[in-house]
Image (cartoon, rainbow, N blue to C red):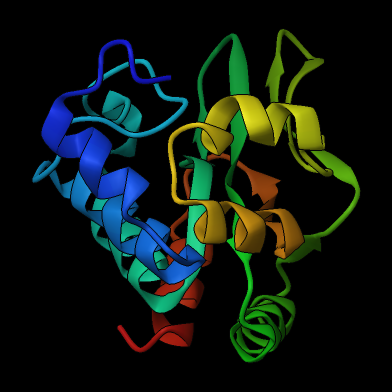
Length: 181
C-alpha cells in the first residue's frame, strides 16, 4: 500500500501504535495536513465529505477510527442515509456513542449490514458488517505499526446510521454532542 504514499506519510502511519494514533492520523488526513491514508487511493476525501470533515475529525480524535461515511442525500435517481462506519477499541466510548445514537432514534449496526444507498429503488451500498481479516491485512497490515494493527483487529466494528433517507444532520449532531463538540 506504500506505492503512492510519500515517505513522510508512510513513516507517520508506520509509527502508529494504537487506534488512537490511527484516529489522529485520519483526522489529519481529513483536514489536509497529511496527504495519504492507507487503503484510500485519493489524496483527499470525496467532495460529498467536505461538510462532514469537522465532525469526522472530532470522532477520530475521540477514538472512533472512521473508515467510511456519507451524508444523507436524495435526488431523482438515488437516495442515501447519513452513515459512518469504523472501529472502536474503547468500550466506554462505544457505550457513550451507542447510547447517544439509540437515544436519538438512530441505528447502531454491529455485525450486520444495513442498506444506506439505493439507486433507482435498488439497494446499492451497505454499511455495518465486519471487514474480513484478509481485507484488514490488505488495507492496513503492511502500512501501520504492528501494535496498532493488532488493536485494529480486536476492535469493535460499528456503523451509526440515520434510518431516514435524504438530507439530515441528525446523525452528525448526535455524534458531535456525544464526543463533546
